[in-house]
Amino acid sequence: MSEKEEDGMSFLEHLEVLRWHLIRAVLAVLVFAITAFVFYDFIFDQIILAPKNVDFFTNRMFALFADYTGIESLKINTKPFQVININMAGQFATHISVSLVIGLIAGFPYLFFEFWRFVRPALYSTEKKHARGSIFYTSFLFALGVSFGYYVITPLSVHFLGSYNVSSQVMNQINLTSYISTITSIVLASGIIFELPILIFFLSKIGLVSPEFLRKYRKHSIVLILILSAIITPPDIFSQILVCLPLLVLYEVGIGISKRIQKQQAKEFE
Image (cartoon, rainbow, N blue to C red; front, side, top):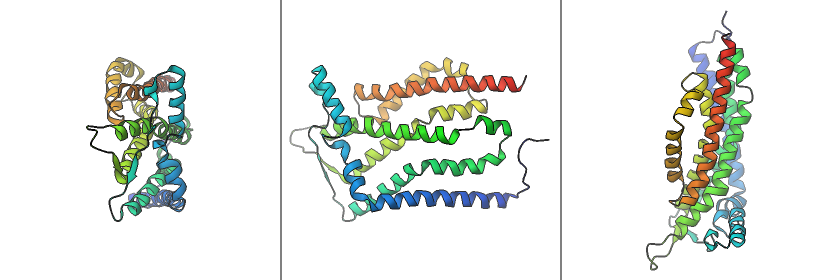
């Protein structure tokens, strides 16, 4: 007898179930998006525009470290640049897009919960056991990645890109749309990248990767991580190192996860 749950549902019935999971997930995102839309003053002043200000937490920590070490170049965003809007509907469009992004980030745990509810009936009992806690770990890693992107990569990127000059005759007045797209892409990319251990977990479960494979290609992975860090950070060594370190840690965690899965699968075949 198969250990999977057989409910005798037709293909169309499965599509109907999937449709309701998607509807609930979208509604959850919309609820968070509407909340963010209503509290736009706090969202923009205290969250979105905060990284470019001197009193932002990360900027203050860098300033303290600079005072301690005497390296003045470590002080970032000491001269906040001006953010401007040049489109008639620019601020309203940005208001909507930012609300949707925040709704997506805040609603991510519920999105994954609905995905898990749809997939769970098709799993074996042993697979359900091994996947226990997946909602928590996936949501935790995503939140950790978003926080890392916001508090570490964003201030460094804002400082580098906002203060970069090709000539003293050119003044930086950053377009609101450009500023928002930079921050949202960094934050979302960081959240997705921090799901690396989860990706390794599933690839190990289906036999595509193993601890030996991950160790063998560790050097290749380090090169890929360096390239990825160069893409999502401003082109300075300090920022790239800050991004590389947690990614390398996550890769090593992934090796440990793959090793544990290999042991579990070996026990099941005994």
